[in-house]
Every structure is written in C-alpha cells, then in structure tokens.
Length: 129
Image (cartoon, rainbow, N blue to C red):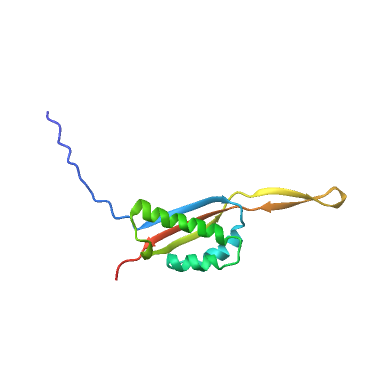
C-alpha cells in the first residue's frame, strides 16, 4: 500500500511591522516610570526622544535607552525606516520588590520597599499614505 505524498504548503509569513525592547529589573518605582512613559505613548520616535531629553525625571534616561534599543532592533532585525517609526505600545510592569528595614526607636523597625520595574517599548512603522 503506497504512502500518501506529503504536500508542502508554503504559507507566506506576514511582514513584521513591529520591533520591541524590554528593560527588566530596573531600579525605579513603576509609579514614577509611568509618569514618563505616559508622555510619549503614541508619538513618533523623533518627537518622543526630544520629549525624553527635556523631561527632568529620573526615569527619562532609562526610558530613552530602551526606546533607542527598540529603534536599533527595528533597523537591524527588520530593516525598518527609523523616520517612519512611532511608539505603538509602551508600558511599565512591576518587578520584584527589594525589602529593606530602617531602625526606629524602642527596638522597632520600619520596612522600606525598593521597587523595580520592567519597561517594554514596542515601535511600529507608519503605513505610507
């Protein structure tokens, strides 16, 4: 009994339209990082970088670094034009919390939470036209 021939289907993969970069375990509070991230969500990449350079927050250089990484990933891995890129998704998730203690009077101690963040940036190419 002959075996049935295998028919290979070559389904074309859809063109990748987004590139991402993630910074994990960043030692900044997610609440403070979200203030910066909310400023640039949906903006074009050049405009977002200008906003980040002029925002006096501790999270600005960190977010700028992740955004530059996402742009580099788009250019190198997917041959996207950096002039057509915009931030399609950007969000900050909470990472693990480092718990520290500060001594207080009468033998007591208060806990200090050193919070960490996971910052994710997804850039996409604007459609022509």
